[in-house]
Image (cartoon, rainbow, N blue to C red; front, side):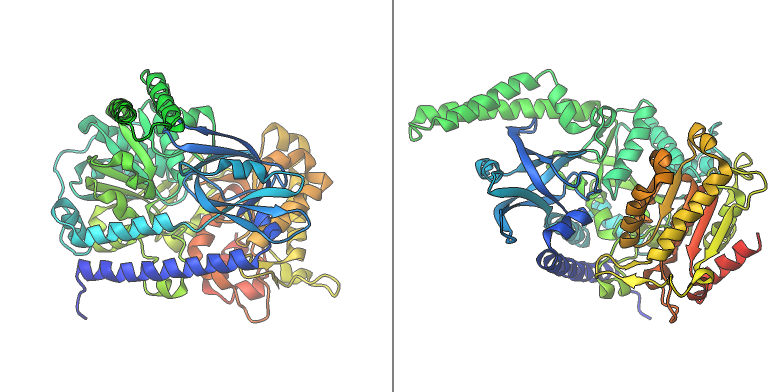
Length: 631
């Protein structure tokens, strides 16, 4: 078989990305046309009705609009920094949606308040007028063209790449050995042996290093240490991740260690600690900012009084003010970037114009196994070496096009380098999260049995003599009046199993009764209820709200999809698998990496509910069932 060149492989990837773009755009169009607005609100893709609160210019001189959600305020939504949105209004007595032509970008969301930046000259008055007794205003997510455009551009640049970019491209696609420095290992007293080895490997790498962190093995701790040590040798590093949440998480840990982080973009959790290291807040806090603000205000006033636009005096004054503003902006920018040791952003956010012309020695990509390869090439052009951290045995990147997925779009840069350059990989082998019985199955199945439990968590449990994992087989409960069969609810929501949802809460209640109410509350024993299907998650949430029994424990229980629990852990995890049919069809539960994430969220107790005859036709679930049966 002929080996494809790196350039051919990337050209092929570009075609697949184009296919994914078209698939997602079409799916988005259909969904927007066919789904009524109430469904979109329930899915978290729209807020309606909303109240126009105010408009103003933010510190980055962008026109911003603030909106407040006035209904369905407890629904989790999918709005976050950087996502494109469109405005609409619905006139009373009508169902037709009237869309505004112009779109905006989410700046941040905090509870029921959202700030959206819009183009200059945006008719904010139209938004104000849309909230009357006769009509209501709404906002919905719109299709994200920008991310695709930036990924395509990054691939084009890499295909043509010369110098360091071209070198890294060719290295990642060949078996040529990455270069390393040679020096004796450095000892870190608060890291374990494999974490220490990983940090040393990062420091020795001239080109690339990979920190492979299975669940609970302290990947973030290791990465933070590697960044700190790198900063002893370099002035500044770039830290990226696929999602805003992952960027927030690593940024927070770095700030806790006293490192000056400059976060490009806004965090998902809007609290003062997180906001204090964002570019926008730092910009506002700069001593020169009031002066800049005054100049910008003068420019706006001058433009609004454009009586004698043609006069040279007007133009001279405008140009003089503009050049003074630019000068101040550059000075503030230089100060902020000069002080920061870590620049942090999402992979797509690394294309921000604030980073134009910036170069870094090292790029750290966290959660690298969840990012499309094309997204990783966006920041890679700015650096001379890269460190990837993540776990390709957990959640993969999301790919909507089945054809693109089959042709290899889902294969990440991290997976590719792990295959091509196993010598650049360190596997973290000691986990600090789970009871040993819970961890052992995952270790054997996904990590060749190499992951071990730290002594302090090995036997952790809530009840004495408890069995850490149980599988409740719903086929045992199938009675004439209660069917534990799955139902299909619409393309994008997937499946639901109402009887299983009832049984899930009953199983949790039984376990709670064994622990006792007072102990649950005193020790704040927390619970995650996971289902792979969104419809089941929403149904479980509704049931939970209705159950009087769970009222005192509401704050301790969260219900979400597998993706929603990525990177998190709970004392007790209950999983509702939903699938139950005579054909043994299990759909996307065949993606075992998702199940690896689900079962490894539990510290002390894991309860699985699922139809064993349906699930165990698949070899993985058969092994899991037998493993639990033998405990």
